[in-house]
Length: 222
Image (cartoon, rainbow, N blue to C red; front, side, top):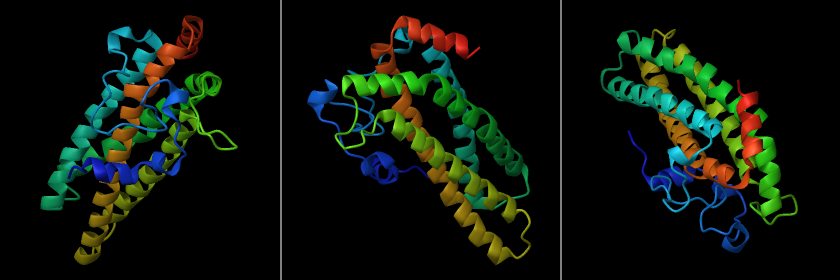
């Protein structure tokens, strides 16, 4: 079950924020006014080899997570057909939520602690923010996405645990449908968030943060 770009845009919290003008940004793309979620802007993204080692670590984390997400999505597709909630699929689903609870959330916490504060300050300095009375930077958006993913992940995991405790087949089928919807939504939210960071935000960090700042971040992440 793969959502198309229009469905992604409906999930996208960026749509709730004020846009930044191209003049303010100095580019037609921004985390506040993103391009198509499935078409990375080649003229904005800094290639992996051009990123500072600290930013490479963040991309590497994302790549590991995306591998887990791909496995989870395949299992969801199988589950939608055979509805086997106690078989081999159960272990894979449990593993994904363990990874989500530890690695994904820990990764987000590290970003919020190390990368986000200096980058938010820099975004305000260069005009990468909304025009509202209380400026909204891309960092505000990313923080909100972290929270929304945590909420959706918690709801999906709780539904999954409940499914395994229900005996009545009809009730289990209803709960399974809810679980599949929440899980697919979670995956699409995570993919869009990772895209926004890997293809736009980290490139802006490479461009607008000093080598000294990035070195400090690398040391803080150890």
